[in-house]
Image (cartoon, rainbow, N blue to C red; front, side):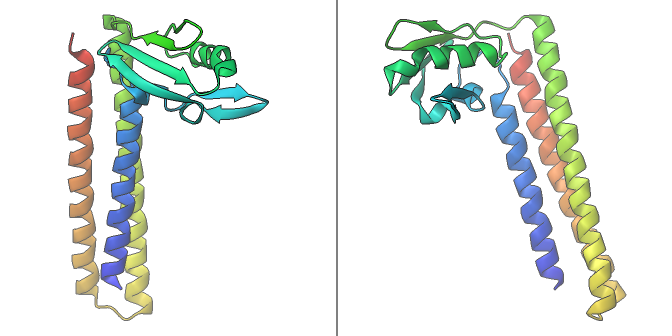
Length: 185
């Protein structure tokens, strides 16, 4: 019973870390990456369609993305969706391919991105603490219902705390790395 609770908490914490990685990948650092356009949806024949389902997105060089739509009639809709997404990108359409130059970040924009990274990190830490709280409540419930000894519960709570500390350290490492990457000129 205790092992299942610990395993569940560990899995949920790992998922929180993965969600943070996914969010951090979307944040621009002045380098071209296809993850920048992951969240963009394009109005296509009346439905909001993810860009990745309408076109091939690739990196041309360190500062340029290339988008090649499978259906040429959607090229203007894709270009409009990128402009409306408020990513600070200005796509150029040549009728066949959309090129998206990634402009270098100025100091103020870098600081804004660092604040955003820290906010994502804090939200992830809150999620980790919530998972810890849920696990501890399950352990207390297991002690009452399943007649698990108090010593086993206390040991398991310590394991949950150690697991939480390890995941929080991992979040801090990811944040430091992303902050360094953003502030790099």
